[in-house]
Image (cartoon, rainbow, N blue to C red; front, side):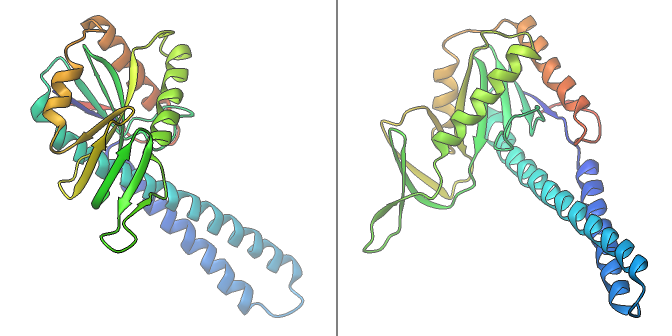
Amino acid sequence: MRLIRPAGPAGHRWALALALGMLVVGCSALVLMAALPDGRVSAIAALGVAAALGLGVGLAWLIRARTDGQRRRKGKDLARLLTPIFDDSYVLIVAPWLPDVPADLAALLIGPAGVRALISRRWQGHYRVRGRSWDYDTRSSDGWIPCRTNPSYDADAVVEAVARWARTAADEPALPIAAAIVFPLPSSTVVLEEPEGEIVTADNAPWWAQRIGRIQRMDPPRVARFVQAVIDAADEGTGRMGAAAPDQA
């Protein structure tokens, strides 16, 4: 399977360094404000503006760097799980950047079976999915309780956003796309009771790959065009640093 990482580690380190630098600037401005004597209104006002900008921009970049780091970890988990079970006709784009697509998009799996928008959950413990309802086993007298978040709804939002982007930016008005919720960690135990949608775990991943591969929806030229469109979107994204670098997994 071909593996593509549009966002390199260098970009993540740069974003983190910039965030910490801006936070230092903001904190320094606050310290200087406290040290100024009374009556220096203009200087205090200027330092206040600098502090607000430094702290605001620093926190924003820190949140972005943290989000990118989480997506990168999820992408590595997906690559380890999916690389052995797909051949070279498939491409896995890890942590792709697409405009107006939620950060829940961990990867895109593109190949003859179409496009799978993958969201990843690194949950630990015992879970159950019935249709679109998700429960957690507390292993106590409380038994099964509803999960705080619903991966099915998150997956719907991601796949709709990717399809909307594909209609305009990738010239794919009828993209064969579906969502897949992936639990790549062996510590995630998921009981599947007639779930709606595709749920992939460390145990059923080979079976899932064989099932989706039975229907051919995209030929190689179409796969290549869509992959290139995703790479171009990543290159144009202002929040991303570094060019996409494909390599053979």
